[in-house]
Image: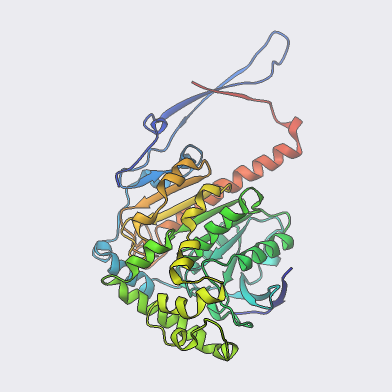
Length: 422
């Protein structure tokens, strides 16, 4: 069990047939009021028809699509900035606004002596009730609570009454490194400890998670491995590379080399801060290669794949891909991808497994780049287009969860309704 130390810190759209017909009528028969009387409640609901600018598919389409009204409107990328996927990716990274808010840091000590940093919104314990829904945020590779896309999501959720915590992996977001091991796409131990920690602290709250890029890959792998035993009530995956072998192939082509070098530089910077922990490491470790890596693959070859017991980088990537986990996910999951994402390739999305899983919904936007999505009411400097969609999804799940809990607590207080679709 982990312990904690608390401190502070400032393709064309694919639709199923029911969505072609915008009107679904339902008849509810309630129990007779008297031996000779039956009351009919006839209701009709207009279903949201997705705009053809999106690709939407998944076994959970019927369950979740009606609550996502944003998808009925066209996706309109911001002019000029979004005409090129690399321009959009870089613009969002460098020029998106950074919301200011005060955070409180908690250092969670893991069973192996490692540490991760959990950043909570300051004073939330005084302003939110213990049963407020809780959202865990997982940033991308080398990312943390200081990244703009993380901050915008944090603010959006907090403004809707959610308790939010950012999970900064080992070495990320100035999280301390106390053992000669960083995090990886394959390692789920820290994720399990974080979920156990927050669910134990707030036992009456429903817990959800949102992950971006590598954080999304880790989140989906966690959902798949926990499967029926997953304590999360819902999750959202954004810009997930899914198939790391495919992502690695594309990462070393054309302009993508720029991202590769930038991420490798960020990894090396984290490593060099804690290099003394890795002195005299024997075996297959290649510390000089990791310390001076010019690509993510080189860093993973020198350090990551050895730390986690893989014989080669390709074996590490193959065994750490979340595309293989989708079929095992039993938690409501929304996956949002951009068709032109240069880092999370469109061809790596496990569409067939998503279509067959009754818990999953996939939304693919025509543009967006990687962690970009410069579109919507707050473009170009505000929150990503995806934020309102994420909020709508988790709010829907929370409403359903609360409704279900009330029904289970008081089964006699609600009419027994028989639902018939015609």
